[in-house]
Structure formats: structure tokens, C-alpha cells
Amino acid sequence: MEAGFGTHFAHTPGMSAKELKRSLLDALFPPFCLLCGGPAEGRFPHCCERCLTVMEPLPSYVCSRCGEPFRVPDDPHLCLRCILKKPPFQWCRGLFRYGDELAAAITLLKFQGKLSLLEPLQWAVKRGVEGIDLPPVDGIVPVPIHFKRLMKRGFNQAEVLAKPLAEILNVPILPAALTRVKEKPQVGLGLKERERNVRDGYVLSREDGSLAGMRLILFDDVYTSGATARVCSRVLRRAGATVLVLALARSMRVQDLHHLPVDLLI
Image (cartoon, rainbow, N blue to C red):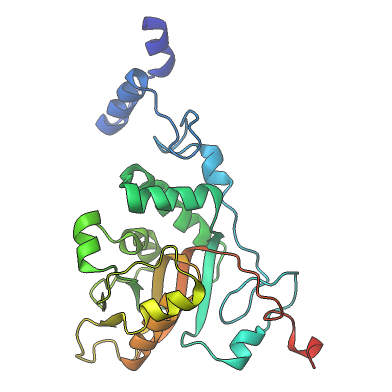
């Protein structure tokens, strides 16, 4: 027992009380990674370095408007979907591919209340933003969740994950800009069902003209079909704002011919 304690506990001069407390707890109860089950030796007590570093950034060759990745490397251009129907947002990007460790971390945070994964996910936001040339904005609007879900969960994941982004851009988070008025979640729904589910599902919290002329980032934890982003963007546009969309994770969907260069289709 003493040998094991000595192996894990380390005290160095100048350690803060918080660092000393964590070192003692780690010695008594060695932490494990919630994502892979292995030892969580690194900057976060319940997420190992391997699971942090294997999060896969999205490729740089994406549609210049909706951000949907192309199947093969190509110069920036609009995808066929955006040419046929212009989306209500000006720009959209995802930071990482939604899958594996990142999907597990987001799911555990949202649905099982594993708050120890919040800090690693905020770190992922910082890391992802480093690789994107973000345009200047006036504020960040987190996609809201329904009041009943907020009371049950205790937090809106989009809002708490947007904090490092707000710090980097030095702009305020505007959590009260939008309100979700429909309770049914999007999880498990198909593309058409998602569209129907969020239709008229978000409204302005107040119509006082305070968003007019503002350039806003609509931020969410996961971008799947884009249904939520489009509905929220339309609401913000009607308030006079210009909308850009950013998500921590984005699913990679197969779109058949939607992302072939237009000159190949003529």
C-alpha cells in the first residue's frame, strides 16, 4: 500500500492547494479515463491524453458556405446543395468529426451528467478553433435546449462549451437570445423527421431589436443534419442579425452528387 501511494503521490515546491489535493486524491484513488477505461494520466483527471489527441479534425476542403466536407480534396467552392438552395446562414464550420471518443464524451456529458468531461471538451473547442480563420463577430448565441430539459440536466451544453470560444474572440455569450419551445429531442430521428421536429421550435426570447445589425456565431455541440442550425439562423436573421454557424462536432454524411463541382454536372 505504501509503495503504491509513493508511486502516485508527488509533491513539488510551489504546488497550489488545488494541485496538492488532486495529487493526494490520485494517489489514493488512481483516476481512469471515462472514454477508454485506461489510466487517465495527463492534464485531465478523467480523460487520457490518447483520447484527447485522437479526436479527428474535419478536412479543410469543404463547401465554402455550409462547410460540408467534400469526398476528395478540391479548391473552395459551393456545393450543389447550397447552389440550389441558399442556406439562411452566411458560413458554417465544424471543428471535429463526430464519432468515437468525441461522440462518447459529448454523450456522457449530456445524458449521464459526467461533468468531469466538460473541461476536456472545452479544451477541444480551443484546439479546434486554432485551425480555423474565424471572421469577426459581435457575440455568440448558443443553441438553447427546452426549459424542462435544462431543469433536468442543470446546464445547456452549447452554452458551457462556448465559453472558451467567447474568451478567444473576446465577445459576450447571449444565452437569452433564443428560446426552444418544443421539447422533443432530435436524437434518433431521420433527416425529414428532424426538419419537422424543429420547425417553429425556436423563437426570439424578446423582440426589442437588440440583435439588429449584429454579426453572430450560432454555436452548438453537434451538427448533424443542419435542421436546427437552419431554423435558428432564420429566426436570428428575421431579427436583423447576420449568422455564422460553428459546432464542436459534425457528422460526416454521404451526399451522393451534392458536393461534386458544378462543372462536372453540366
